Image 1 (tube, rainbow, N blue to C red):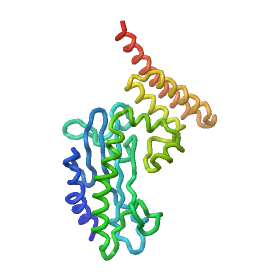
Image 2 (cartoon, rainbow, N blue to C red; image 1 turned 135 degrees about the horizontal axis):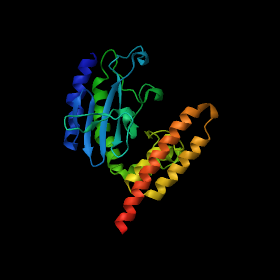
Image 3 (cartoon, helix red, strand yellow; image 1 turned 60 degrees about the horizontal axis):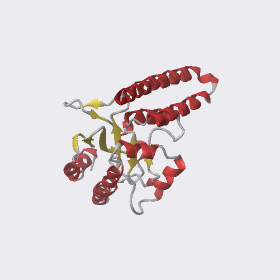
Length: 245
């Protein structure tokens, strides 16, 4: 059993199960689904060779799913398909969740690894559990975050609130990070929640002010980025005033 064999099994027996839900996969072990203003994705990754334990094969894997929001400008946007639709990688998702075994599995430290053992006896169990998690947990997760407003609600939680609700879902940076606040500002502008966007921008400026003076180049770059977001906010406010005239 090698990676090519496991890839074939996962594509044919697992990812095809997502097609009735609207997912399409054409790049190895990643599947995408397109909804208004967002792209859903599921991605399976083989574990790094240095993480392989003595009785595992290097075709052991983990997987996760996430949402990429198209309203947020990116310095390095994802590649696109023939229809010019983004095909983000998991590390480009704006909200994501990692899959974990539902029961005991070789110790809790390996809860995110679906291990293919040397005698390949675990293959059927891994594939079956992967399919079940995608059709239950992942499906429910995507339903939970079915709108930009739902994603905003999750990203506005504190880190402790998020851990209490769903400890395995994560977004860009920590709750108080500069990156999270800029991201939220963009999303709130796209939802026309302009006062909330202004509040996030102000909090981002406070984060920049707390950075050490030795990081002046980074601070200047962040200030420029925030100024650009403020210009977007001013444009959105102008549109809002114009619509009322």
